[in-house]
Amino acid sequence: MQLLLAECKDQAGRRIYRDRIYIPNYMPLKLRLIQDFHASPASGHPGRSKILELLARQYYWPKMHRDVDQYLRNCHICQWSRIARHTSFAILRPLPIQNAAWRHLSMDFITGLPWSNGFNAILVVVCRLTKMRHLIPYRDTCAAEQLQISSFAMSSSSMDCQNQSYRIAALSSHLSS
Image (cartoon, one colour):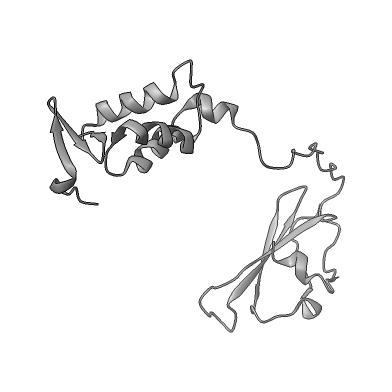
């Protein structure tokens, strides 16, 4: 917004714009005015609209809203005393400790890969106990009903599910986490 000289007057060495004192683009002065209206004991840290109303009664500068918003975002007292508008946090419960390898698995897809040997996705299967993983090539068009993890080639003798087949059916909502 441009200042129209027709709307300005000079009074006692001050520029008056629409019956308010015009504040030049000098940030220390702007910050001092905002601080005086916001952090004074009488005002008690009012919100954005109240500060803008109080400032606009006497003062004017371009982009006053932006400067007030920036000041309020950085006011530690306002941030600390702000009311939380989200639901309370639930009690954390630890996951159970596993007692055998490859009994509890986590699975996820990596998709959007370039085509290689007829595949463009990878199924990642991780043992929750040992954190060992298998990376299985797949196509991203594979449906959950067709997904079958077969013939894990386990090299370690401590794994008790060698050459077993796992069938996952109707878990499409759980596969894309």
